[in-house]
Length: 151
Image 1: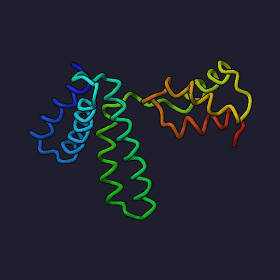
Image 2 (image 1 turned 180 degrees about the horizontal axis):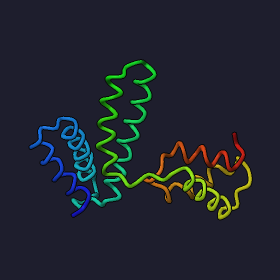
Image 3 (image 1 turned 45 degrees about the vertical axis):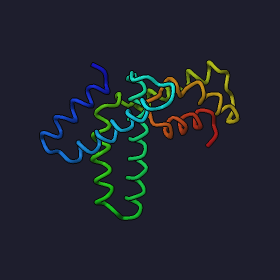
Image 4 (image 1 turned 90 degrees about the vertical axis):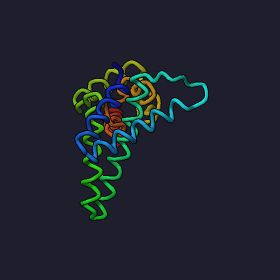
């Protein structure tokens, strides 16, 4: 059973349990999957990687909204976004810690032969496919900048 099927099954359970937050969040993810299937040239099969991309995008939106609402003093809206983010993170792969990212960055820097801050794009281009869905891009970028001395 693929990730999309798991989400569909969990939606049914959430509807039976009358869990509004979970139901709404999973419906939003399934709408993203449906839109992906409707794209020209895309078949009905959706890979777990594609579903993870959708989940990652939606989780990023929630993180940004939480930050914006918290800055504006709208704690009730931030809490609502956090509840949705909690549902999304259940389906995402476990996030890498900063130590793991730092190790991977150091390895990638030596692989691509980067030596100064101007090589940031080269390092990020080689690194992001390795951490896709497993680490926040902002954190990865900050660690790369630190390792390259671009602070």
